[in-house]
Image (cartoon, rainbow, N blue to C red; front, side):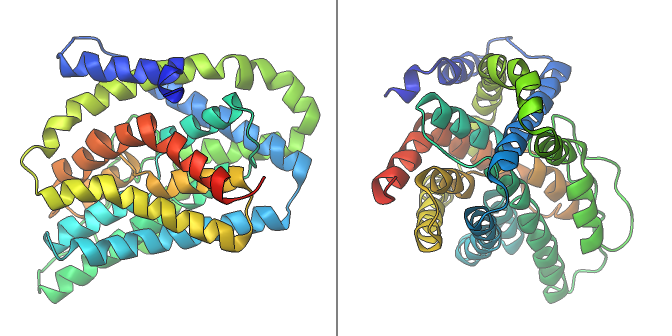
Length: 341
């Protein structure tokens, strides 16, 4: 309940309500994109400052290894489950969407931990970056495999992968075969993704001096701009909720229960790897989140056989609001209950 009284969360709820009553309240796309880039830059700097203080430790290496393992396991398992209920293309699209991550959900969880004085490692921002691409690559590989099995001629072109928080659409597509190297290149050189990683490097290099200089930027402004961005996300979530009407109850159940299973898997890995409660919390949040821009941007071009209203509506219309309103405090509470401080 305390989480629901947080101003940033209340602005998200307000955005949802405004969207449901079909208000003309709207955040201009340019402002939304600026807020997205600001949040990524601030998150990267915070992570870099923390890494400069802690250095590369066994905890850092274990966290990153767990993140990569989850980024491969979650979409692979999701596809095996979903293909029993929907077409292979829809199954791989939904699995990839839920196998990737939501930066807004992660940033909101970071803010929650900071507000409640709970410790965590700044390197978890790097874990988030590592968890975006594996699901995209898996989706491309599975789509090509399904087409070959079905003897469907031709290959689909691949456009820009976008980024977790990018407000823009996919870039121009390139005719020809889908190259995994191209997918990797576009994932790691996308502007928003590159900004996150670059800001982490700047934070590591500048250290304490940089932290002092940038404190007003990454500290005082962060909460207010996050609230503004969550208002926009509330509007988007409300406007995408109708997309899931009439869908199979099994798919709706996956949108609710899938993230819980993924979070439980993350908690199990965190316990085995000896992660701290704070890092385990963020790993659970990442595993339970679903991409609503990065992966859909790729799937729209790489897997046109899949239904965008399905994977986009499920992630943004159901899973994202549930994680923001209820999931984050639950995951954090469970991690701290299971793992001793």
